[in-house]
Image (cartoon, rainbow, N blue to C red):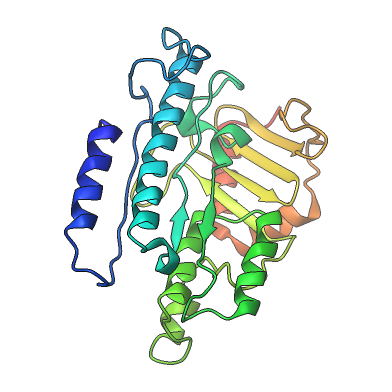
Length: 266
């Protein structure tokens, strides 16, 4: 998909809205998805004849598209009354680890951009809520948090009949404090998608535990080893927080047990 053409369509759609009318827009950019949108170099620093240069150039195309979108909202006076949330479904690897993106739980794939822009005045949010959102910029969050966050943006009550629905969601609103020791789960096989070489990743603060069919176990300290090169795992000795998480997630425990039976850890 050509994001430049796409952004033109988005701006045309927004311009056609009645002045002052509320809107919800889900805008999906695609330039940085493999095989990466091929465009003339946006600067001499982008060598589009090789993979990383083509990817970086695609990032610039995406940046320009996002700038055009936000500039339109600002010029029409809508940005002062519009919440903008940007995230991604996955990152991209360029050979950092010997794993395809669909089998990788390393930072280059699991770590994604995530920002929320909130106007200074928003009718459904208190100053305390916005301050809490700012404080959450320093902890890890996940895409499961998108829906609960947007429900708060739209002023959906926490009382019945919505309370049960909101309690059943696995994510949390980012207008509430996020625990620093929260464990985030990543999987490549779920009911709606299945890839070869099953596995999962658990991240708590700066610690990451990875278990995959093809590579087995890994434990990394992202604060000291951001490239995830030094595997700290001791065979047969899992960190306590991993034990607790597996006890709380029988689906992950069953997956790990099955893969261990099929291919015992060396």
